[in-house]
Amino acid sequence: MKTISHYLFNHEIQANASKSDAQRCLILAAFSSGISRIHGLDESEDVLSMKRCLSEIGAEFHGTNPTKVIPIQKENKKALVLNVGESGFALRTIAFMSLLCSEDVSLNGTGTLLQREQHQLITILKQLGLQVDSNEGKLPLHIRGKIGFSEISVDGSEGSQAISGLCLLAPHLPNGLQVHLEKLKSKPYLALTLQRMRTTGIRIVEISSDTFFISNQSSYHSDAYQIEGDWSGAANFIVGASISGSIRITGLQATSMQADRSIMDFIQSFGAKAHWEDKVLCISQADTKRTFQATITDCPDLFPILVILACSVHGTSIIRGVERLKNKESDRLLVMCKLLDTFGVNHELHSNELQIHGTGKILGGMIQTHHDHRIAMAASIAGCLSQNDIILSDEHCVAKSYPNFFNDLGN
Image (cartoon, rainbow, N blue to C red; front, side, top):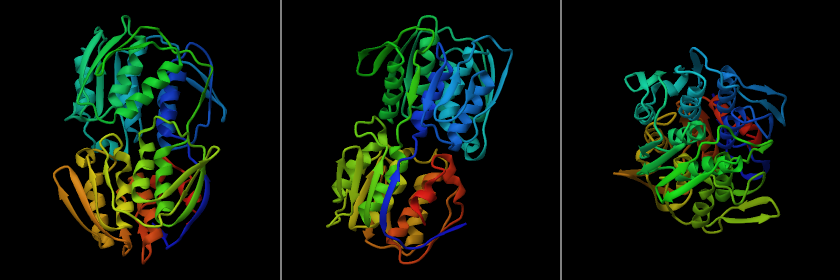
């Protein structure tokens, strides 16, 4: 357990490395045509899980900052048995990339990932002509067969991670792959994947707004990768400073394609002051805090910290697009509603939106994090407006994405 006492923001931090960007770059480097170097990798659990899986397949990693990557030799292995830890992105990408080295792949995980449904991933794999056995739609998965398709139509309503895995595989298929998307959610995350692929020389042709073709090019080509700072982790500090105090953050890219960069739109609607000084993002609290409305269809990871932002203002704020929050590390909608009850903040759930009736203060109390890193971080930021201590049932879960979170928070 960890106790968070009331505090004011007056921070200067370096943004943590983006695990989303890092995991993509690790895959690109591991399947490149030659040796490459990755600058800015961190030691978050999801990044370590990805490295471990790629090592099992045949990649080698040497040193830190930069990390030298010796790529996988795509010889056919009889069988692969891989554990992705608690990383959903590793699962939904390694499921595809491992097929380049084996026609018999078993995938398992740990922790909350074992309870998460993988229907979209399983459906796509079966569409490619593969045999997939699962535990009633959950891990472990056993994948067998060889891909013989060059065109596929995918339902993207459950998110874009598996689609990113499909796209990362596509250049290695004999005839490339044409992908048609329907009802895609989390679009910026797929855009980040395609952008990174293009920087390695992969040709992607947009046929229409929802259809594109990825040509066969056998491998990626890049000597070096620089990992971006993480807008998802920084969003917690940005909200904290918007509520109370100020912060200066280095390491973020103002033009990043990361979905959670949209936190800037939400805090400016709230009334916070934000500007860039060269490459430093400067945030200071709102003089007049305003209620806001946010749609999180493409940025669901912002939900917990936006709930805290809504608590800090007098009046009703509305967060829309909450239907996809159940299949995360926890049922984030349910967990955050319970957190609001603990904090003494009234709220109403209507279909696909949560209305939060903020009063500008919260009671504090014991928070069950459900081993969810984003719940723990958001609840910690709530300390800047809490009347009493906030006690986290588990603070170690932040290591999944942001191992140095509490050092940066200084509480």
